[in-house]
Structure formats: C-alpha cells, structure tokens
Length: 125
Image 1 (cartoon, rainbow, N blue to C red):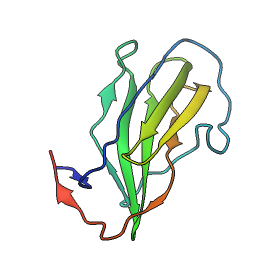
Image 2 (cartoon, rainbow, N blue to C red):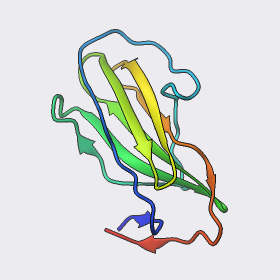
Image 3 (spheres, one colour):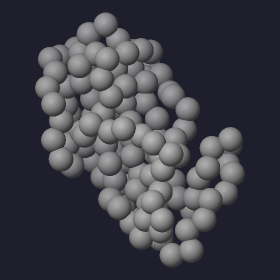
C-alpha cells in the first residue's frame, strides 16, 4: 500500500523518449538530481511505452505540513534519452523542459511546495 493525501492527484503528462546526449540538470523548471527518502511517498515504477527500461513514478513529498509533487525518471536503458514532463496537484502544475538523461541516471521534476493545514495520510492502493 502507498500513502497518499486525500484530494491530491499526482499525474504524469507528456513523457517523451528519443535518443540524445546527456548533461546535468538545473533548478526548476529544469530536471533536478533527486534522492528520494522516507519523506517521499511514491507509486511503483511505470515503464515508458517507447522504452521499457526508462522507468518513472509519481511522488508526494511530505515534510511536516508542507507537501510537494514530483515526477521521477530513471534511465536504465543502454543509451541516453530525452525526457520532459509535468507534475500537478489540485492547486498547481509544474512543467519541466525537455532535457537529456544519461543512462544509469535519475532525475526529478518537482512541483511547487505547498503548506497544507491538517495534512494527514491515508492508505490508498
């Protein structure tokens, strides 16, 4: 089971994969290096339809009464790919520009940080 917050929806839009070169990510709206920890509540991995070795998941990051959505992509393929994406909750959307992702690396598209009064977890799937 995964922990989610009532009324919040994390969704993934516009993931694209094509062969390309790689370089480091920058601050939002650019893809960022991420290190998910116990404050990250993520779905299981989904395989990209164009390349099943490119995995992605939706996450909700919770720290006290603050929350943030994230789209995390891992490139497990044998070569570089290009990625772009969007993450959203019921209050905002954040887009991350098309960017190269070197094989063996992981990046995150982070949404806006929100303060949520009476934030609590429930069990979903």
